[in-house]
Image (cartoon, rainbow, N blue to C red; front, side, top):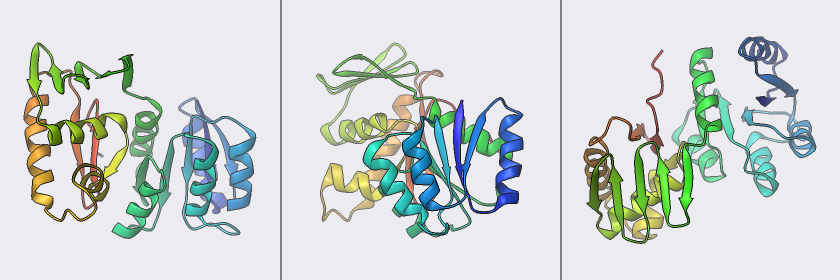
Amino acid sequence: MKVLIVEDEVAYVEALRIALDAEGIDTVAALDGREAIKAARADQYDAILLDLMLPSVGGLDVLRAVRKTSQVPVIVVSAKDSEADVVSALELGADDYLTKPYSVRELLARIHAVVRRSTSVDDPDVWTVGTMKLDASNYQLKVGGETFDLPRKEFEVMALLVEQSGRIVARDRILEEVWGMNWGDTKSLDQHIRRLRRKLEADEGAPHIATIRRVGYRLEQIPDPKF
């Protein structure tokens, strides 16, 4: 695995490189935004760790530039922890957001989670995640040996989570794409998530829907470790 570290604090970069190297992960470092954009365009990476507060070009602008040419997994790693910062990064295409300080074990878990794309396509109309299958032709959710016929909105919520499997999907994005721009009833989304979770509980090998507090949801094949 090869990871691009975008961070302007040299001591921080060195600590990350030592930790990732111990796990067999190769690293390349970029100390400012312009260098990061050049590095991202010059080579292939399995993931990018991106700080937001960078000299020359800010982290969000780096993210915009990267997303114009690549869908490489990007984990924003920042001391900025406001809801607005998290949502902005996710809307621009970040796969995950980790707030400093954090443990190395948590960072490694997040890296492996975004790199491991849990969605596989057996058929253009069927998505598979773990033991779960989502059948777009019939609006059916198949978990273990059970088949559930999904109402339209419930299917659309699940389809969005599956399409972005392993990534955080902001609540506002779900509401906009499933219910429309002016929909303000967040309780409906809560109820749909609750019903989907009950269906996924039908089999231990199925993914689960994790709540990312104040931000949104993420479909995960295994729970994130707690440290």
